[in-house]
Image (cartoon, rainbow, N blue to C red; front, top):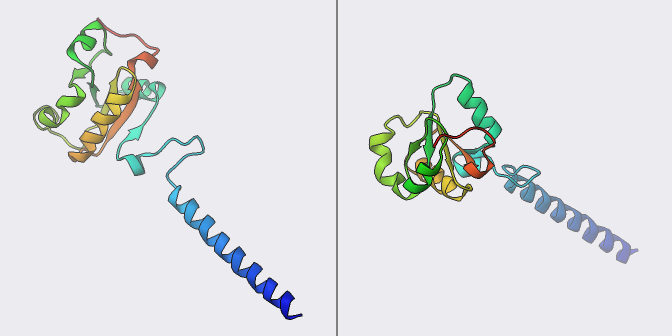
Length: 145
C-alpha cells in the first residue's frame, strides 16, 4: 500500500511539473502564429503580404513607401511612389528623410531579407508604424521603370 501511495504522489508531482512546463512553453510562444510567422509584438514591426500592402496603398491612407534595394535595382523597376533608401543607409538617412516617427512606413526590397533588416533598423531608431512586405519578386502588381 505504501508503494502505491508513493507512486501516486510521484505521478501527481510529474503531472504538475509537466503542466507547468507546458504553460511556460505556451506563454513563451504566444506571439507565434500556427504557421510560425511572428507578429509585430516580437519584431517591433508588422510583417504583411503584398496583397495587404497593396490594400493599404489603394486605401487613400497616408504612407511612406521605402525600397531598401540598391540604386541599380531601383532603376530596373520599382513600385510607384517608392523612395529609395538602401537598407545599409537607413540609419544615416532616416532622421532627415523620415522625420515623422509615427508615420505609416511600408518597406520592401528584392526578396525580403533587406526589407526585414531595414524595418528592424527603423524600429530601433524609434519608428512606431513600420510594415514590411517582403520582396518585389513577390509583387504581383505593376512596377515602374
